[in-house]
Image 1 (cartoon, rainbow, N blue to C red):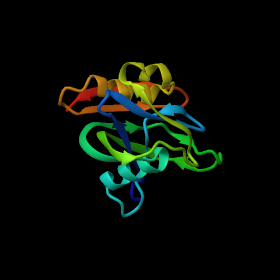
Image 2 (tube, rainbow, N blue to C red; image 1 turned 120 degrees about the vertical axis):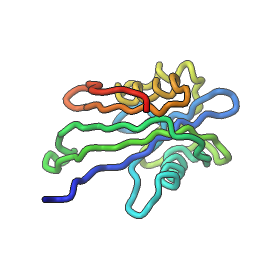
Image 3 (tube, rainbow, N blue to C red; image 1 turned 90 degrees about the horizontal axis):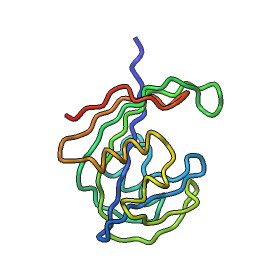
Image 4 (cartoon, one colour; image 1 turned 30 degrees about the horizontal axis):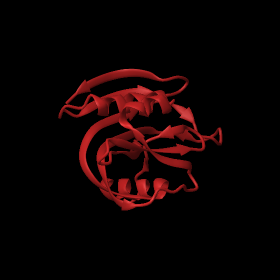
Length: 160
């Protein structure tokens, strides 16, 4: 039996002292909160701080886990050949501690957006659903199972 393969990713909802949320505009998915894949040998916290810094220029401290998500879609990568494995994503609340807004190879813009206007900018159904989980967070971790291909379908949502 082959060992299962998963992609592990982290997302950071970075809120500053003015109640604004850090968003980055990606080339493929539009506006999102920063995050990305955890690299081999890297822990979750270091990966998240690295991804936020790379995508936005902002240094952060990771404060609290708020959600664990499974994207169980079965689909092909951009090359049309490679199977994309199940993705396990963990979202955290983060606080900025320095840096300056900038862009990267992955992002064309980065900005602070008032918390109540974030959903006006995010178009990805999965990211909107996960951001809403942040808005609804009251101490219990959100767990969701969804698929994104061919369209977004939320299969399971609960608090644990």
